[in-house]
Length: 366
Image (tube, rainbow, N blue to C red; front, side):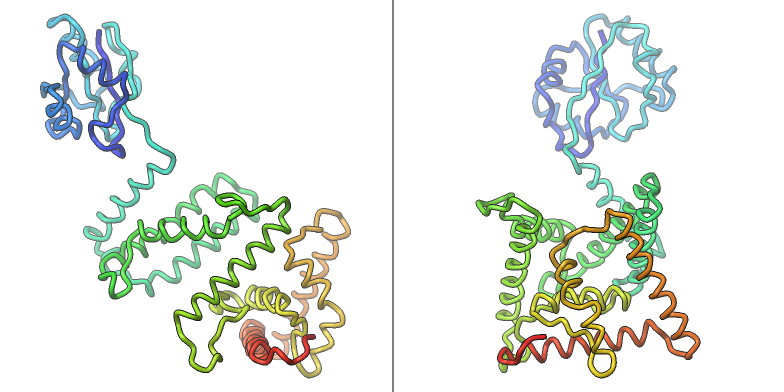
């Protein structure tokens, strides 16, 4: 009887299932074709000493099956074959054996365990690849943005097969930046991929008290309300740490807004944030009447996270807005104006107005 023992390289050697240890201790011979197999030290320490045999390469399934079968027949009894952990064994190997056999999974990966492969691959790339070795946070910035846009495009197209790959490309950027940061001491802002994971996990738990604590939330609106209160507290805490002497740099509803994003996304996010502070006037001067046409009600619905775009009428309205934006871009182009730059400038002016009004709480809101 031959037992083919499979094990994961992502699980500490020796952490095997009860079934695996039972088979190992009951075996007359434990065989391995790789002198450096990670399980050898752990098994040897437990009194199970594997015999390293000169077997055919794992990829040659037929030759390896014949070799193992002959060993079992010649020696008699039960034998365990420690399969390599690199996945090089031909999956058809068991079916090629001429002796009775069983296949045992000695250890299983936890969900997310394969991310450990990315850590080791990223370490090797950073050391061994000339291009990867030269990269910095700044040089990788354009790739981070490009990969995010490419992932967004697959979602827009409904191409879920492509999304799998594009999400991986986005993930690679996160691993790359963490690997670069790990080369600096913690005192100089260095961090590891584990630090990133710990920070994210703590944030997710903190911002979901209805899941991890006793807060009650029965609807998406309740979740949004809790979310905003938590983020408000976080902004206040960050401002306290920063220590603004005159209050001018105190917590703002705009804290956390990325001004590096495309101007249209920036304008939309600034308007959503401003609505939370009761500010719904988007511009000054001749453009201020936009509030009367698209102000408070639209912003309030957007801010609450409602989705009333399921019906045909709502879709027609959304398409109309898209057409109007295209027409506005055409007008700007004909006038020799860069719409991206001008909208970004207007968004920045609006941000200044919001912060000014936040510093003067006595002023009436729009």
